[in-house]
Image 1 (cartoon, rainbow, N blue to C red):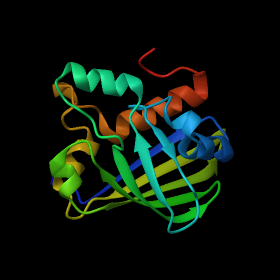
Image 2: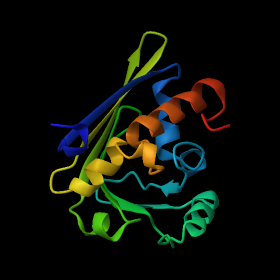
Image 3: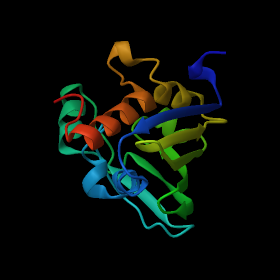
Length: 169
């Protein structure tokens, strides 16, 4: 089975930062727009609260240059569990593509644990009944310009927290 077909994808990265700083980078809109593909995510961390990610200006311009109009909200879902700064569990759906938007909500878990010299961040993305989303977040289409999925996002987050700069700078 290839990673693009996996119904559960697990990514783990070690970051020279405190769990609290990683938590802020994941949950604060002033951080979420700075790494990965950008986009401001506003969370109300109350279980049952809805959330949405709005595309960054750079993302909107890049999509428009390729003839694609992005929706006002590109990712949505619901907070299932929030235990700062240790664990965040969400339902998660990508809305940038009509086929992905039609798939079931997926389940996304962030686990942050102290580790020697920093913290370990584990992302578990359960993608049952969402094959198109599973392919996209696996990064399998990176060579085609479709992005590097979770591996890229987490590498960019690590770079930002450790150096103050994202990979593309």
